[in-house]
Length: 439
Ligand code: LLP
Image (cartoon, rainbow, N blue to C red; front, side):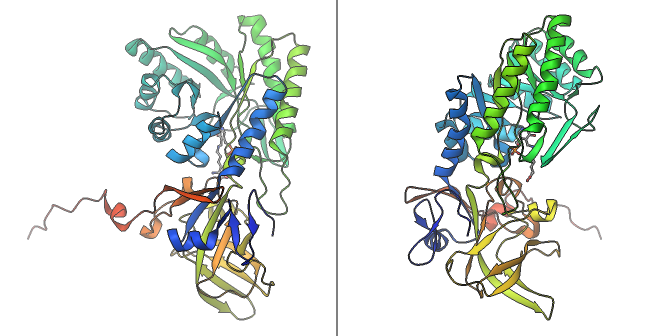
């Protein structure tokens, strides 16, 4: 078993996380259950932050809360001195409810509504990452109306797309996000933004992809942007105080994944920005990054109870669990791969290969194909690792299945941060039909 963070096997042969036996967590909170290893989240956060500090670079490490947004999680991000990236009124509202300092909130999105932008201005958040011309117009009219001032970054698409081991270079990026850096759109946006009253343009932002294992995509993006910043200094006397290089740092889901440590990504990025800005005679900007998955992904484990089985002779054995695509849609949506163990019998020898089926009425609701396990029967506990990012945040109520609770574990203590949804919660938005059938 590959162990993450504080994960270990105790003398009963049970999986233990944060010093807490997960068998006792299942008994206390029921299953399915999301468990977060708080010490591992802190370790990852410090891995990013300390590297900037060690190298004396002014930075903001913003937690991309789309990976997992809940009040307790936002408060943990605050404890660790992170900034926060939100992408909707709902994520912004959660951050405010959590008491997160507004000046460290950055607001993203390719179609922010007038109401969402107004809320951001009212809350005086740290920065809006402007995505398009429509948003620039909305912002101008809101600043005029509300008499507010706001910091912005311009999101640019540098023509670099990165996924895991590959990156693609294109003259123009076919993406719904941001101002194209290669066809004049970014210059047009820059000139508009520089002329806006109440708007302070701090710099530029880009995000090149997700689950990236190499630094080349980031350093190429930095090169392209710095080259542009050099041009813009000459043409428009614009000097960027901030360079935000987004998120996308990869994590280990299975043994095929070989991510770098947070410090390694950060060191390479800093080195490149220092070298290139020096080469072009530009001042070193603040570097901002936005990790989501790499802060919370491998800190999350989902615990399920096993139930029915189906044997298809000479083909496979299906083992069903009490969750599935409701609490983890990633296998169905992205063909994502996970590892898992029987959490109540971790040391038992592997005896068979089973495929883990969810409980939704959908054939595609398969969590893991061909998983080697000890002989499992109903009532065992299955722990699926690395579900901390985009698990709870993409959970849904298909088949009217309530969403599981979230528990934080640290130093032998467990704390519920999201309670289990009830059947009453499921119907609370429904209204009875008032129209009667006309005879
Ligand atoms: N910044 C921006 C502008 C982003 O669009 C994203 C992710 C991040 C930061 C954080 O990226 P991360 O460090 O988490 O890779 N639902 C998908 C992932 C979608 C990512 C969208 N943007 C999944 O489950 O894999």
